Length: 397
Ligand SMILES: Cc1ncc(COP(=O)(O)O)c(C=O)c1O
Image 1 (tube, protein in one colour):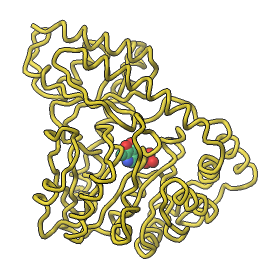
Image 2 (cartoon, rainbow, N blue to C red; image 1 turned 135 degrees about the vertical axis):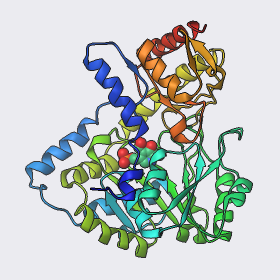
Image 3 (cartoon, helix red, strand yellow; image 1 turned 45 degrees about the vertical axis):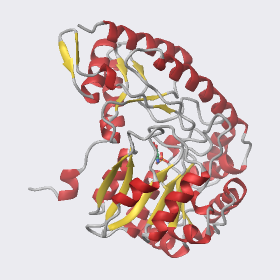
Image 4 (cartoon, rainbow, N blue to C red; image 1 turned 180 degrees about the horizontal axis):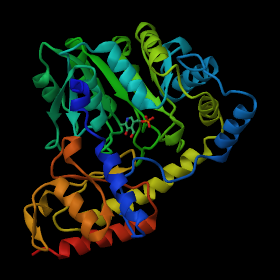
């Protein structure tokens, strides 16, 4: 029997598959240093776990409303107003099982077959796969040679065609860690508005930001931009709650309500006790968020300094998220222990096979020659990983 075109075109997540291979090797008792995973290494804060336990005992174990509990949407609404200066009433908010699902629900609501989705590269690979699953076409805009790997209004203008429907902006960005400032966002939004595009603003890393940079929400730039933007966020990265699967989308009420109707048929709604935990996460003490952020900040410096000391590697300083995305083209097209390494995938594989060092290749992010290191790992792992990387390079023939 033949599978559908969507099933045949679906790629496994590059990050998850490399992480799985690293775990498989580690399960054999080998010491793997892994920088692959896109989640904080801290435990979920205790007050959040206790809220989930209380909710479970109190019987929040049944289906919730398909778009999420009203009390959670109320808390998210207040948080948007406090944190981002955005006015999203609870009826304009959809809670999903993670931001990933929220993104997919909303893509299903704006994209028709053949529509084009504009993706500035480097980009988070799931955007492209989700667009394809909607029958749309991802159009990658190469920003790799830009000084900060960011989209410019000129490059956006050049990429827009008659079928362009949606622009996705992710700031702070996975994988680059780059942060767009207000002026940059406004320039992009103006081009999007002039061409009547939807904008998806993925802000899941907004609280993980360094060097005094300020996160700016796209939807807050003007009334017109607000009306064409859907803002995405989640408790996953901010509160170390990746496994709880709570994320959300906020935008014009009609599209959010359409997404809620779709969601009611696709998942019935988000996990009930995790939603109660998310209420505590967002409205309770924020101390743990700052503690985690400042730890990431220390590791960020340690890792990027270490990478930049290695010949053949150039790493821009990430202003947000928890990824370093060095340009490693200087390491390619050389032989190591008799094997020619010509691309980022072979480099990642060789690092894992010879040094037990797991990093994600840049190719699936639309940036061949780069590697992605998550610094949501201990300082010891960063020291150890850098040593392994140097040892590998020393094997150059
Ligand atoms: C840029 C970006 N958006 C969305 C997500 C998905 O977040 P969630 O775990 O809430 O589904 C991720 C997770 O890696 C991400 O990096």
